[in-house]
Image (tube, rainbow, N blue to C red; front, side):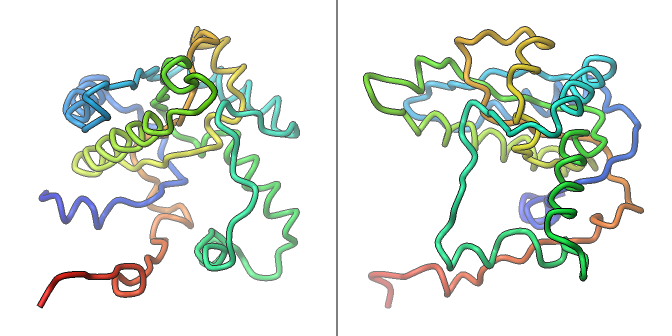
Length: 222
C-alpha cells in the first residue's frame, strides 16, 4: 500500500471486532512511527499501550464515571466559529428524529466503552515541557499530533482501524491509577486501535473534507 492510498483509506473507526492486535504488529507500528518530526528533535512523546485485562479495567473505570463531567489534562474545546460548526459530526452520524440529549448520551456511553477497541495507545508528555514559565509550549502537542498521524497511517497499512479519541482520556485519574502514569506527566491523547467491525453502521462512513480551493491561497505562481 502506498502513502496516498493509506491517507485516503484512513478514517475514524468506532466499531471493532474483539480480536486482539498482536504485540509484534504494534511494536512494528510504534517503531516506524518514531520517525515523526518534532520541535528541535525533542521527541517529547511517551506511550502507554494497553490491551487485554488492563484495558478492560480502564473501560470499567470509564463506565463508572460515564455520568461525570470530563476532566482531561488538556481541556476539551467548548465552542467553534460558525464556519467550523458545519464540519462537526452530526451529518452522516446523526440518525434522523433523534433527541439531541439521547444521542449525546449514547455517544458518551460508546466513548466510555472505548468503542469496543481491543487496544489503546496513550500518548503523554512531561508536564514541565508543556508548562513553561507562565505559558504553554503548544509545539509539544503539535509534535504528538505528528506521531499520532504516523501511527494511524501505519495501522491502515496493516488492515487496522483507529480513532484518535478524546473520550479515551476524559478520566485521567483512571488512567493514572491503572497504568501508573504519574502526575508529572500530561496525558495528551489516546489512539484506539483494532480490526474494524465491517458490519458496524459507521464502517462505510467517511467524513467529507473542504475542497482545497476553498481553504488555500496561492502566491507567486504563474
